[in-house]
Each structure stands twice: as C-alpha cells, then as structure tokens.
Image (tube, rainbow, N blue to C red; front, top):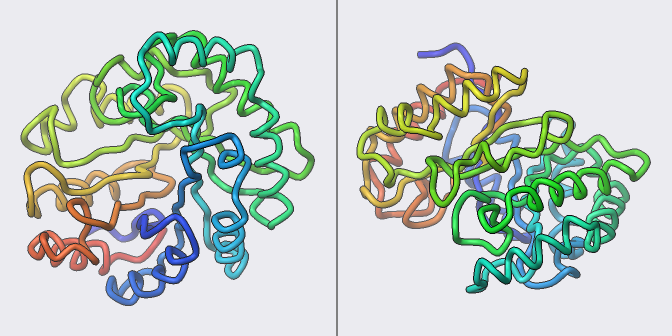
Length: 294
C-alpha cells in the first residue's frame, strides 16, 4: 500500500447540489479529505462559457472555505457543444475561433472567476478533443484547434490576478485522431490529463496502459515536457462492476506524478451513488479511503 495519494474528488453535479454532496462523498469514503471540486460549464451558448453565477459562485465559495482545496472547471471551447455538428461545420467554427473571434468570452470567464476568489482554478478547455462527442473536437482542423486553445489561454491569462493552470485532457486511446496531433504547446499547457473509463479500446487494464495513446503514452509524453498528469474523469463503464479496474487505477494513480483525480460518480461509472457497482464500490472505499493525501 502506498504511503500517500494525490488529491481526490468526484464529479457529483455541476451546480450547488454538487458542492452540497461533497461532504457526503467524503463521509462515505471515510479516509482522506476530499479536496478536489470538479464542475462543468453548460454547453449551449457563449453566455454559458462566460460562467453562469449558479455554477461559478457555489464552487468558488466551496473552494474559498479551505486553502487546501482545488477547483477543476471544464470549459467548452465551442458552442453549442453537445449537438450533431458535421466535420465541415466544426471546421468552419474552428477557423473563426482560431482568428480570435470568441476569445472575449474566455476573458470574461477569467474575470468572473477571479472576482469570486477562484483565480487559481484548474481550467480544462476542450476536453476529449480527440473524439467525436463534442463540437469542440480537434480532428476537423487540428491546426485551427491548437490555435484556438492558445487563444483561450492567452485571453484568460491576460486578466490581472489570474493564477490559472490549464489541463490538456484527451480521452484514452486514439479515438478519431491521435491526441498528440492536437497538443497546442508546452507554453499553454500546465497539466496533461486523460479521461479514462473501463471500456474499449482494450479489455484489461494492461491494455489501457500499453495501447497507443494510452496511459503509458500519457506519462511519457508528460515527462518529456516536465509536466504532471491528471485524471479529471474516470470510472467504470462497459464492463460493469469490475473491481479489477478500480485496483488498476489506484495503483496507477498512486505511483505516478498525478496532480488530482476525480471519479465520475453517477451510474454507470460511479461508486458512491451508483448501486449497480457494489463490488467496485467496496474496493474503491477500501483503497482510496485508507491512504492519506500527499
């Protein structure tokens, strides 16, 4: 058993109900303090990206209550972000974005975070960009995507008082494009993340480690750039209640340079509030609940 683990959290809900649930998750875990709060901005409009009060304020206040806490904020890079947009439509949006057309929205978001006391938030722009789920995906125009990411970071860093860290977070595996082709540069990335669920590509945890664009590639890519890694989203999925996956993630997370990790705690992924995964829940609580934070 390792002596310590990186800061731990769970995605519980985007709004105030998420902050209210953190204490329950921590009580259930029964061990280390839960110091990572994770939320998402809505996907529908640029007003959403600028940061709605009902999301930013409760999480900023939760963060401010304890200096040891960290706030992780997933930010859509294009809107609407969860619609069936064609590659041509995405490419056209990325071309506009690369020119800086949308950057003001991210500057306003930075201002609002700083005003609320969350100047040190970890920002995750355009997560899972290597896939096909979101409008803010990379494959339709990787060069424009990278330029847009750089513009987002520049806009947010331009606001006085900011201490943001930016987390480049693909999904595990190649998906629609190798995620290294989307990497926007060491000067605009502080953390190299990866969203990973118990699903293909791969059947066993060793597959997740060894596959192209998998967990080992993440570690190696980050180490070559002097960057730490993260897991903003992870959890069970296609293979059901499989405690072997929880054990694999525990061993991987506690043996690498991980800044933070948050499990997606809802069915089918979760361990506290999902009754479908009783064996995995017990193992998660036994492992992560028994090791103090670094």
